[in-house]
Length: 161
Image: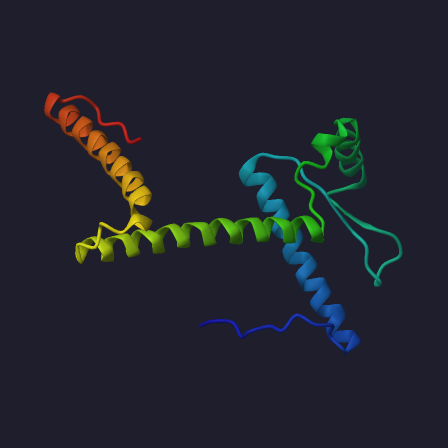
């Protein structure tokens, strides 16, 4: 049985919001606890809320202090290596989208070349450079396949490249 779709917006009823916060916080801390056990790492959580005075820390204040001290002793580059703000996130998403677009354009171009080749219109000057590149790729793939065939025939271990 699937869960119903949740819209992420502020819960207007204060008591419902408080219960939801508590349940989600408990779930988050449980996942963090499981992560520390299964992966053998040290982790902590500091949670500020409107429902308690001061921060709530997990697993305890001493462990949090130790981990924060370890973090502060690292060089700034290492401290911030995996930190991201909204701008960084958007830039990464744009880069990923551009890479995906490039792959799709290459695939589209290959399909176009295939269509042109199937109709024997290869004399068009627009395609000559692309055909040379495609022929080079095909030659490299054929070479790799021949090497694998020779390796299998000789009984050697096959290594994927």
